[in-house]
Amino acid sequence: MTDFIEVAKLLDGIRVESSRKKKVTSIASFLRKLEPMSIYPATLFVSGRVFSETDSRNLNLSWKGISKAMEEAFGIKPDDLAKYYDGDAGEAVENYLKQDDLIVQSTLFSEPLTIRSVFRDLSRLASYSGKGSKKAREGIVQNMISEASPQEAKYIVSLLLGDLRTGVSEGLVLECISEAFEIDSHLIRRALGFLGDIGRVAEIAAVDGQSGIEEVKIEIFTPIKPMLAVPIDNPEELLESEDGPFSFEPKYDGARVQIHINKNSCRIFSRRLLEVTDSLPDIVHLVRSVFLKEDAIFDGEVIAVNENGVPYPFQVVMRRFGRTKGTEEASRRVKLQLRVFDILYLNSEMLVDDAYFKRRVNLIDSLPEEYVTPSKMMKNIDSIQEMFSTSKKQGHEGLMIKKINSPYQLGKRGRYWFKLKHNLETLDLVIVAAEWGHGRRNDWLSDYHLAVYDSENGDYVMIGKTFKGLTDAEFEQMTRRLLSLETSRSKGIVTVKPEVVVEVLASEIQDSPTYESGMALRFARIVHIRDDKAPSDATTLEDLHSIYSSQFKYKAKLE
DNA sequence: GTTGTCTGCCC
DNA sequence: ATTCTGC
DNA sequence: GCAGAATGGGCAGACAAC
Image (tube, rainbow, N blue to C red; front, top):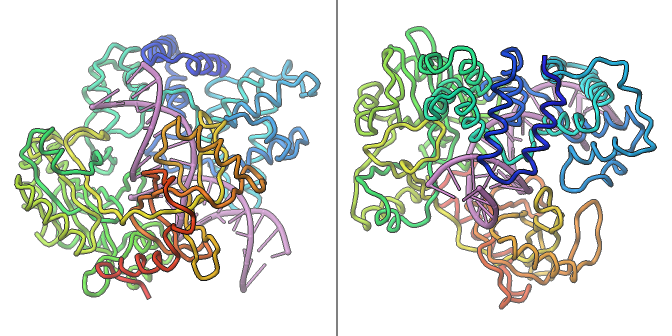
């Protein structure tokens, strides 16, 4: 049984290696030498996870729980532990444990941690529920860290947080498996798409080799990785740079659903491959009553609509989609609409390698047209712009643009699907505070509190935060500038004199239960630093209200 | 019984 | 989810 | 062009604290 310290050493090496190729090679040679029993957990570990994507279990513990466990184990207060933080939570714990004068119960007499023992202990976190379960989880972590070396503790913490920061994640682990067991990486990627469990893929590659990987296929009721789209902001550029023909579909602002059916049942999975069947009793009923009665897998979106079929904002969808209790009652209050846009499996045939237009034919034959996402082939830019604008008037999110000759690429953001989304007009917002970053942004103020100007009383009213849009050089400059405007600081938040104005693009103004204004930006990102504007020239609270209200010209409002 | 905190997951 | 960066 | 890192708002649910 390989010891966990070997994983820790491997990951330490990977972290400081910048070449991806070399990272992959060292992980590959590690996996190759590993005994079969440890391949499953080791592969998940190097991908930065404890549970596979299809595993519905949760660790139910994060930094707060870890700090409490540390306090129990060593008596260190969370605030004091934070002093050891220098960009990485795992390292904070390691640095603390490495102190010369720290008396740690000797690890000399305990068994060394092995990959499997760490996996087992971490898995145990998922098994507690009910009263006292938080304490119990913290107890496990406390024990694990007490028995671990500082180096091991670092990675136990990183794994708990799902934040390894090695520069290796699932995409490169695929390459590692490919290199370790000498199997074409496309086959590995495909098997992962079908299984959603990279540990299993590695195990199959190790034990059964290429033929085992080739035998992996789609199975009903095992969710497969959904295909993803590349964001674009200009359809003209796309038409110039990519070969068509393209088909255009409305993009719905809802939640992705993957629907699996056979003669007797229907199960539904989310974009991240978790089962959501029980949250959607109405959709299940619909599918079972009107879809064809064969083995099949569909890809689609559910949106919430009012009695006239007008879409509600995304938040309303989530009141249904995230619910596991009182689902029947909720389904009576808020109606969901199903829009199916793809079929991936039919009657023991995988359709993922078929071209889009061919899959559409199967799709249309499999369910009533009203549940199929409309699709139109276009090459004229004016018609495209018109459809884009229609999608807005219908309360939708934009357009999906798909190459009609493309296969369904599992889990990939390839160059076959594109998405074009509506945004708000840009807003000029004032930075009123900023937070220190983590990881590579550790020394910068990288998350900015954004406010509108309340011209009634001269206040600045916060409506969201953003960390997106600036380059590294701009972050550095902005950090210096904001520090020169600092008025106070507490808990990593630096409050500044409202002076810096940034032009911000957002997709929507949402209802906010947290901000005083009752409004918050969705997907806010900085598009320009507006040195030409004074804070009093910023978008006003009044402007924001009116933009907020105008959204309901095309969207339904939940009373 | 109610409110607050934490977590995970949807976008 | 979006954005930037290094390979 | 891909993969990874950094981090947003809000929802429900589970549990803890009052």
